[in-house]
Image 1 (cartoon, helix red, strand yellow):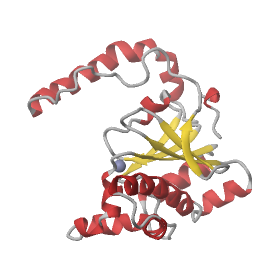
Image 2 (tube, protein in one colour; image 1 turned 90 degrees about the vertical axis):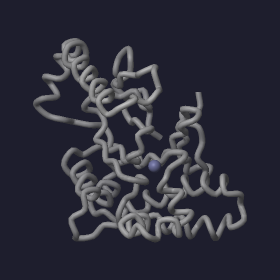
Image 3 (cartoon, rainbow, N blue to C red; image 1 turned 30 degrees about the vertical axis):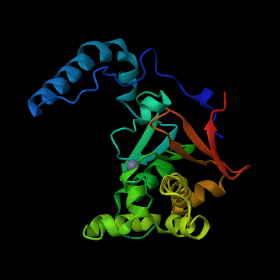
Image 4 (cartoon, rainbow, N blue to C red; image 1 turned 90 degrees about the horizontal axis):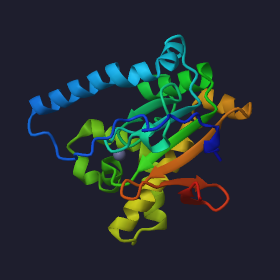
Length: 237
Ligand SMILES: [Zn+2]
């Protein structure tokens, strides 16, 4: 299991400027103004306070982990892990899916290869989340039948769906979604092992792979435990 104590914590406020006002901006102009204010605040306040770190990072990156998660706006890797610039190499896509390895150029595969073979990250975290639109589409493929690109993409989670329907065919919808979210993470860990760079790193015992589900409503991370075969609140303190 990943020991969080090994992380170099980003101080004080977390890496992300939190806005207490959750109301959506009323117009595109208002959001543009908010973006402008944020960029300005970063340049004038945040950057100068950590100038030495950014100057160091300008020369090279040496991240500790590849963090592969959903593109969902509510999942903010640096926020939920309280990590800072240079620590996570992040790959995001709808549903935190890992395509099976093939010779065809796929962005996700390139990220994995670069992070594992070149940057030599020591950890890969596959992080799913609650209320995921892709997991819902996996459960109800008929709803995306007229979206061919989405339907093809969700095919990389087909193994999770098969397992759900075999093992929990009559569970209530909400329970099926929870289980499928977890099975999807395990499915992607399986898919990850089809990538030669990952297989090599595992053989050389220099890579640990972690399966997480981030719960938006509670702020909890539940991590897969090989000991119990379940996703459990992590860390347990
Ligand atoms: Zn999602």
